Every structure is written in C-alpha cells, then in structure tokens.
Image 1 (cartoon, rainbow, N blue to C red):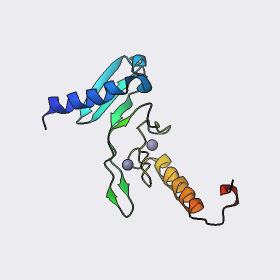
Image 2: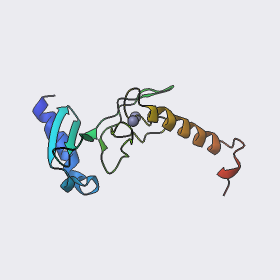
Image 3: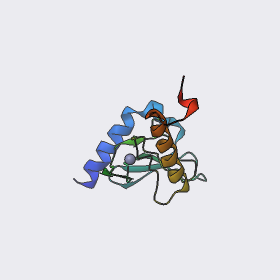
Image 4: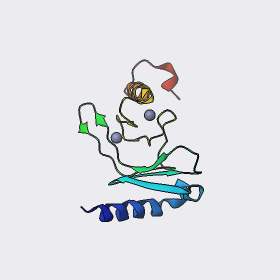
Length: 124
Ligand SMILES: [Zn+2]
Ligand SMILES: [Zn+2]
C-alpha cells in the first residue's frame, strides 16, 4: 500500500470520528507512518497520538494489531500520551511504559473477579 493511500485511509477514519476525537482543538498535524498520526493543540504543546494501531502483544494470543485507535474513542495514556488499546488482555500504549504493566494487572484482576475468584467487591 502506498504512503498516500495509507494517509487517505487514515484521514478517512479520523474524519469519521472527528467529533468524538475533538479535532477542532488541534492545530498542527504530522503523519508518522501508515495508520499513525500525531497532532498538537498549540505550537508549544507536546505531540499527541490521535490515530494509531496497536503494537501490543497479547499473552497467549500473539500480536494484537487492533486498528484504528482514535483519540476520544480510546483512552490516552497519562504517562506516554499514546493511545491505549482497549482490546481484552492487551491495554498496550507504548513499549516499556510503566502504565501498561499496571493496566495489564488491572485487567487480570478484573478477569479473575469475573471468573468468580474470591473477590467480595465484585458482587452486586
Ligand atoms: Zn503509556
Ligand atoms: Zn492491542
């Protein structure tokens, strides 16, 4: 797939979710790679990932590759400012981010709670 084609499909995805993504708030955009777009609100701001795909690895499943991850629809990691994959068991944001490990731990605990492990607060 050509770079231009990749750019167009990325922008198409973003355009479709422009409202939830709050695109009006962004002033500067940069296209990093196929399916990866960053933006900032002001020139002095940091770059935020606004469109991405998941580069995570799910234990027992393999490469995640969930796509697209869109700002506003997906959580932005407070630590590394990458988009967080919401796929079960993944929760990937970026390589080596400390928040990712914590997120995996949380998901693991939730899963255990659902499976009926002795977690009192899981009962409603
Ligand atoms: Zn992170
Ligand atoms: Zn993922």
